[in-house]
View 1 (cartoon, rainbow, N blue to C red):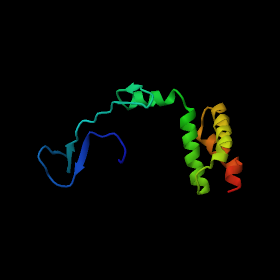
View 2 (cartoon, rainbow, N blue to C red):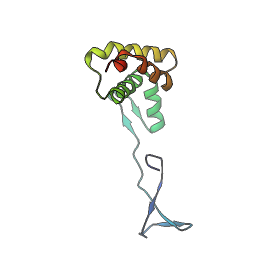
View 3 (cartoon, helix red, strand yellow):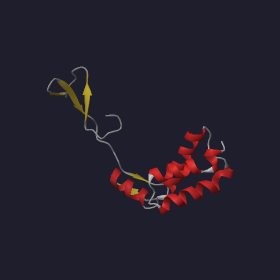
View 4 (cartoon, one colour):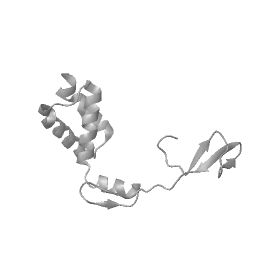
Length: 116
């Protein structure tokens, strides 16, 4: 699976250290350093801690997703003049617990989408 968590990688040819599991070869991958620090200086030890840091403030995530969806839907990135409308969309989405369906609905109803 692309992008999924895995410790073993499938091989097409035998290499030293490979392990055979019913007709397939696997090799254990290197350990991953999942620690890091946000731009604000908050540290995390793994992906779960990173997700918890991101979820403390959902507005930036909703805003970024809104901008990407507007870009995809209209074929062009939002202009500076679209910022108030994006903020209004994020506010309405916040009021409905940041649902993706709500975000898409709000974008479709926006003048940004309907007039481009």
